[in-house]
Image (cartoon, rainbow, N blue to C red; front, side):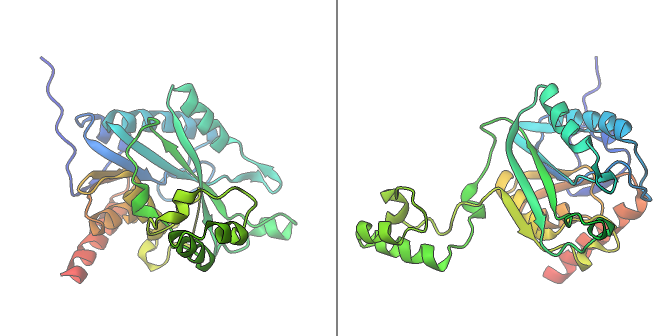
Length: 283
């Protein structure tokens, strides 16, 4: 009789290879996965991958994550294209997306993260544009859990005026003031949802002091968007490449449960310390 796998250890940062660690746990136990895996062709203290080796590894990561997700759960991999040389883009992000389709998985929507404070790199000196966009590769069933109400954007002043006119039944005035030529949906301006539905481009500043020396951390604002959007209250968020602990720290602050994995003991310690410091500050 096969030994039953244990449930994932909620509220813990585990050190080890994420695929081996995840494959030890019971399946269909996690609500959402939000992570920024290491990229190929970049030497870091946590390793180096060729493009081919990275794609092979990521197929294993995705399968392990898929097994852990509940039926209506989804996962987000934050990846940023890089170049083989200035003027020659590396194809691995595109191949990763094709691999996801080839594995029979569903891409829910194309979503992008814009780093509005991105500093110029050497490619700018070569006359190229500044690298500022990364992909949020969102994988899961078409009807996955998502709470748009939790991530509404604040209305612009002009939209607030349109909503007020709609509430007062002045739809003719609404059409005159509409900033586009599209027809106006009466229901849209007849009620106030409390904010505007977000676009699929998410702009934040870069990670700051919360990175704790990690060379490739992503900002808390980006993690907060995804945690609020795709993980229900008191749900479980997993980050299999936890790094500086951003996803776990944000999840805890937002009332979600969390699990983190990192292959380096140094980053596991930093992530634990960050969460303890956050708990101390809140208490």
